[in-house]
Image (tube, rainbow over all chains, first blue to last red; front, side, top):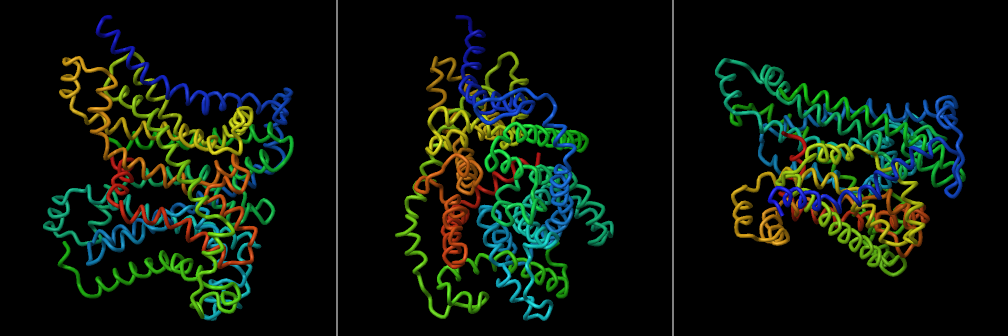
Length: 290
Length: 276
């Protein structure tokens, strides 16, 4: 056989197993979901109902509650971004023991969202340690039902999200900081720039690619990664008030009968949203590459 | 610039770092300490220390909830899934990194694009597929879903590593007429070992912590993974906080041990995606 043909052939053969597997578990099911989003489907039989699932999603008002819940998480990203930045800038000062703090901060990140969720659920319970603590400080009557009211339920969920993300954020920004060359810092301090000037004129601007990366990965996480946390902290309640889209897909598909078509349509809506966020990421990262 | 700080600045830095350390670490200590209490003792004073250290909860986990079996289920599934992932991802990554063929970059873009598809959007057809294959409530449904959905991200990381393998080594193997399988086992895989270790850590801890896939595909209690068991079986005993906490603590131990033992690989893996 000719050498080039042989090389081409070995290339395609190397890809074949992976592509067969991806076709069976991702590409085909994705097409299948898309098709069934236009049907009423109970898992065995389906019949075509056109755009009715979509029409229902956009008119029954549920989607706006779900989207609002996702957007609340989305709006919490700047907070954790700022916290991670502050922590990494402080760690970058390399005070004694900074490595110890860096390692410690990462521990919550490696725990399962289930562990974090259930743990916080107990700590924020009515008879839990948080209420006990606030009561001891005289800040509340110690009887607050965190998870039965919407604003406080979100506070608990966002606290879990922050608690899990801070260590990762600090580590990512720290590696971004250490890629800034020391010469820039030194020449700027010779020029008489103080710490704050260096922070705003050198450190932050050169971290922008890392900031974009952090923001976008967490934005995607807010649409596809919250399932386990919501499942273990609030189960989406009270009502649907803390239910994000992915949790709703799960409820409709596995907890309610005959809703598979509706659930498929909701999946496609989620897919389009995530596609849009990824597209924004691509645009932004291309812009900042220069 | 480390030496030019005043005492106050240092004090402020330490104050912030220590405050965050307490917020980060207190819940973990809380989980560990309260695992060793009785429910009665716990509810007298949830924030306090045990009146008496008591390890009945761990005994209950061992005898009543068969925690070793749950650990075994998770470990078996995660290891099998990792082998499947690597078997699929290594040859494909090698092809993308080092072999020239038509449509290489468009196929690679397709793989990368696949990473953005949320896995919940194709779970219903997969559930029906697995039930048709008789694999629902069988560990292999979880193994297949875990491993294949992780293939794209693993290819992404392996390709960027394998591009670093010097072409001269591969050329030499071509001239010697070494076959494809031998190039793989003698050159490509040995040179990729550090990357494979990093991937092993990330994949298996991710799977260990996963709720969604095993929650949907496994139903009987004795087949559940540890994380799902805690979220479902132990949650039935919702009022026995110390018991649930001991389950959470057991679930957290393996990832924490892996993290402490293999820190340097974890940092490497985290940074691959972010800077570049």
